[in-house]
Image (tube, rainbow, N blue to C red; front, side):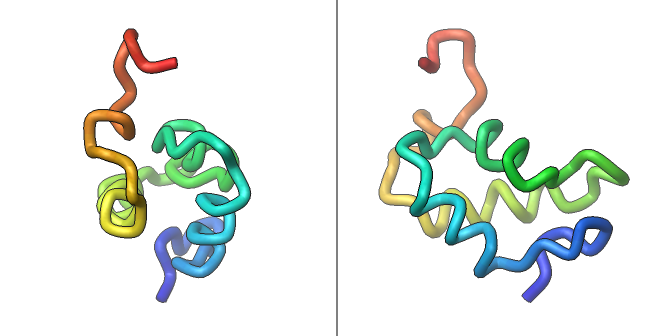
Length: 68
């Protein structure tokens, strides 16, 4: 299934980036794929997918100033 129509990013590609990166920070993952850089309507779906597929706690995925 496609996560981002503008960039043609699939759930499989999202999963591959998640498993290849040491950080599960959603902002880093979205930036790596270019998700949300065009129309932005995919960002919520992409973040929900990251949360569902990640073993990290939801607080770790939020873009907060305390997140390193």
